[in-house]
Image (cartoon, rainbow, N blue to C red; front, side):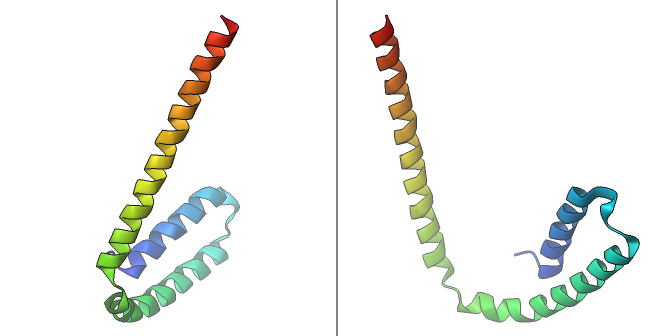
Length: 92
C-alpha cells in the first residue's frame, strides 16, 4: 500500500492541475505544509487502521459488487440491442 504522503501528494497535484495558475504562492506553501503534517499523521495511524480491516472480506465484497455491476451492465447492453432490433423491425 502506498504511504499517505504519496496519496496526498497525488491529490494535491490533481487540485493544482485543475486550478492552474489561480493558486497563489502563499496558498501553495500552505498546501505543502498541510500535506506534510497530514501525511505524517496518517502514516502514524494507517498501520493500526489496516490491522483492523478484514481485507479478505473486503475483497470478497468488492468482487461480488463488481460482478453484480458487470451483470447489470450486460443486461442493459442486451436490452438496448434488443430495443434496436425491435425498432428496426418495426420501421422496416
